[in-house]
Length: 263
Image (cartoon, rainbow, N blue to C red; front, side, top):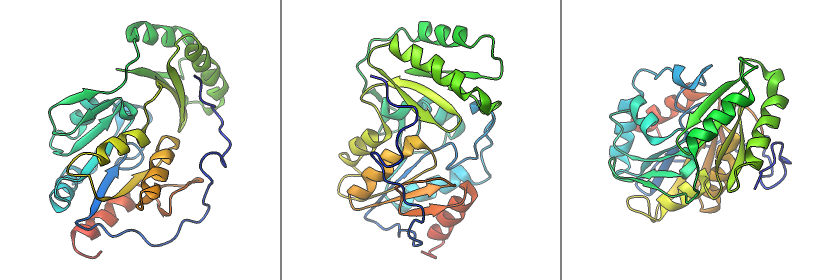
């Protein structure tokens, strides 16, 4: 299955150009879900070049305590990578768009069921764009991504190469992202990750609040709102989210205000 690279913005997520101004309260009944890149940290030229803001890990630990553990990271990165950046984070992590799930900080549960020679996939991706050094090929444990941030004019090249890889790997689907296209297992997604976490303690029975910046987060924000919660769009762009913050620094400021008791 190949998901469209340029989905109609009205399907399945009608854009909300001006999200409602009020941010949600974070109470004892809230479950908080946070994307990583572009949400907790600024987007970097390369995935391995992100800068962890001062105080981020402590902020997450304090939120985890405040919400009795109902705080999760939800990312396209794999869990091991996320833990290398935030080793002290005690909460749940959904990595690889939900293909990996860690509920207790130790046990990692793989949820996808696709047989894949991932090393061969990584080689094929690198070979496909070997003559385009501006394209960054990012190997992942359950797929591969191509980034064209260094030269946005290469977007058609990336889309064509990834579409060809998708056609050669049944069961994998294309996931558009900011200046990138990813190939990931079908049946995974951040909305599914949120759904699975919401069925387990300490998240079960709470109201979800999901903050994210990318196309990969839209389904999860829509799902959070369908459950009576709220999506928070970080940055510009059309979104289903009811709320918006300008950038990771603004999100950090809001969370600090929550922790200080201002909200």
